[in-house]
Length: 312
Image (tube, rainbow, N blue to C red; front, side, top):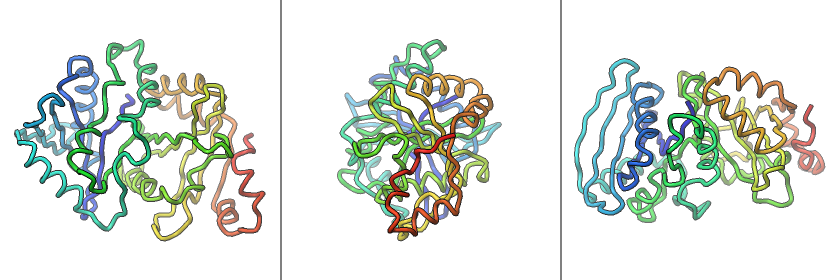
């Protein structure tokens, strides 16, 4: 099953923790899907600790926090109610615990509360399932609560736009805003200013089930008909001071959003088949030597411009 994970964060000791937020004001519409997602997370062991936070946007004075130590057979749960002031102190203490990482203000990249593209994908994926009544556009993934709680403080957390739990597939969506590139020529390696987020995703992918996971970046735009590229990241430079980003990857080409949406529906029920289909698509393999040329040959500008054009 595919689902988003609201917030993850690395602690100083290397533990990876997760937060899931449930706005009880809209619980009736979304409770079945969220309950299933929380159940899968609570029975997993790919994070060290999970905090399920229930709150009401109409009356945020008290929140319920369910602390979970995951276990595939018998997760350990502990529930407690906290007032908003104490929750803010507790959450900010966790958020700022690993100051060795760089960070940014929450929501600086967009004014949206929740990702409309991901929400629309989830709506189409689950249209003919038991979760067909879920209103994904109502789910803000706790962003409103977290923004108020942090009150301008930088966030050290990140999220999984989508996560497939049987084959441990992490999917990050990268919307193309630059009109000078296409979805085929866009690539995260062009934008080192976002490196810390990509490092966090790469470290999470390597921690989950001892690195037995798959990290995919998806280049898309508002155009339904424009080709979409899915980048399978094979290696990544984790030195924050370096301008290098991806060190090895494979780009796969989808003809447009409709083909991509159908592929995600298959992944939701049969991830193995979806991965097989992905690797049969037109692709461009970029190994370590390819990327060394990209990063080192500063005078060869044309080489950088043709990034992603050759898909066979």
